[in-house]
Amino acid sequence: MLRHEPPEVAVDAAFRHDVLAGFATRPRAIPARWFYDRAGSELFEAITDLPEYYPTRVETGLLEKHSSDVARIAGAGRAVVEFGSGSSVKTPHLLRAVSPAAYVPIDISGEFLRASSAELAKGFPGLSVLPVEADFMKPFALPEAIAETPKLGFFPGSTIGNMIARSSVNLLRTMRETLSTGAMLLIGMDRVKDEQILTAAYDDAAGVTARFNLNLLVRINRELGGTIPVEAFRHRAIWNDYYARIEMHLEAVRDVGFTIDGQPFDLKAGETIHTENSHKYGPRDARLLLRAGGWSPVAEWTDEAGQFALILAEARAQREAP
Image (cartoon, rainbow, N blue to C red; front, side, top):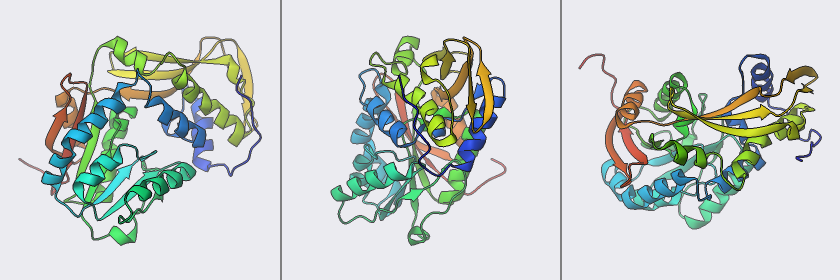
């Protein structure tokens, strides 16, 4: 059983709002970005090493093979800005190839961000590493030190798939505004594939993804004074073919009542909390999504099996006609 811990950190007002609103609506849903407290970030890094979780291995292989192509097209001297950097484990492949002017990792988990940035800096002693703690889903300011430096955005891991289409387009537009016209963006997108491969990647045999999902409830209990009996929920990963996405849910295994921030809630057995989507894109879908967000694809690389794609796009001057 996962234990409840007393509040020990300042409560994020946006976290409280999203959790209370998510439990009050039907169907219940909480944005996936709140997975990433310190424990959640560490569990996600463990997920990326699992045998079932193909995206990290495939994307890392693509970066090893094609980062030199990215460097040739983008040119040297850009500031690499990584959205949702996590442990930055894939980033060295890109940094070694593109000879950046600076590296700006952005992550919502400040403690994890600072630790991973310090570790990466050891391997690049001459590189200016400028971590920014921020929710990249919202506008934020880049460091003044790179204000006049051309940018190369880096958004690996198919994180764009966690959002519905409207939110994805809005994020891509925000990235464009943040990085400015002339910037480039290297983005990872997962492809549609066999359902068994997809569901196994999000419901591993060792149960790491289940712990990652359930940790959201642990965080709610800790930071919002919740009384959720975590053992009354189980992890579920479902392929929704209509939306071309894996959905992660927390399903109540029995009728349950609890409070969050003093407010009462209850779920019947079988009811779920929708915690994450992971959309998968065909080649044309991916390019259309980028164009809708203000980015023009200029190059694309995939593995031999066509499981995953790296796409390099450019923020060109806006046009209203062909």
